Image (cartoon, rainbow, N blue to C red; front, side, top):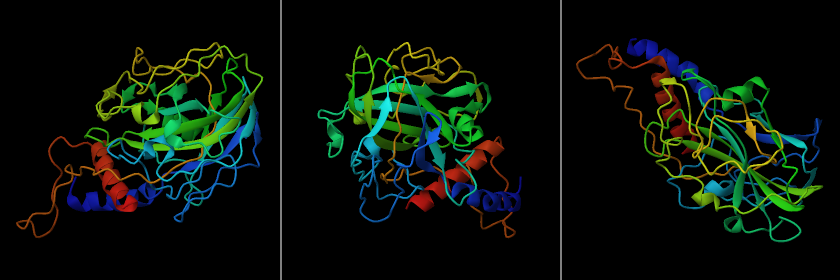
Length: 333
């Protein structure tokens, strides 16, 4: 492939990469909620409903290299002012979209979807301190089908018109919870701190649960390590299994399937694993990751035509990842 061909591909990819997506609403029991999640804004965030507000636009992601706590519910996230009522055992669909972009999520941003809950200490999650929340996992889906790169949870979400269904565990104790829902984009995860996290949070008020499920958890800042096998990974290969990062799925009998494995599970390919979960509106701007773009060579002074061939062995998928990384860094700056 010549540099000219590469430049053409870069132009084609620019539109695709310039938009990521966000959870714009939730669907509960098949009915779209009027209490939609707040949009992102570049001004100080102000929550107006159960969704957590944030000041970062949907091009932003957070990285584990960020130390501001943005991994909790995104940088600058403000707790929702109300709690969305749900019944334990019911399904909540998180709806991803990028209004005006013509896509739900960029197809190149392969990765898992995960959902966590954290029980709030009082009768509401409005005004809760983000760093005080202790999360446990209720949903996970990673590698859906093996292959060269493979089919991922993000691909399933796109096919489902942006929907990620999560069952609220019927064993939950009644009370107020923060649901933390996220997609992790792995297209640049082959380098340190290259994985991109898109967390979103929303307040829930759960009733009708049996109360037999433990709500003990861990701080969001302790959910992942930068060197976890599911975080530092080159997906541009023949993938047969994927160790989903984070703590084990909180066991219930809610019938949520088995995912492609958690960090402490087998990592086998399978159906969605949803021990239960709730919506999340968040997103905040974390310090952007410094992304490697070494796969694309700089034009040399000895090549006046600028037609520099790609390094030997570079695949189209790797080139596309490099372009994505470069544009992600540009748009998040």
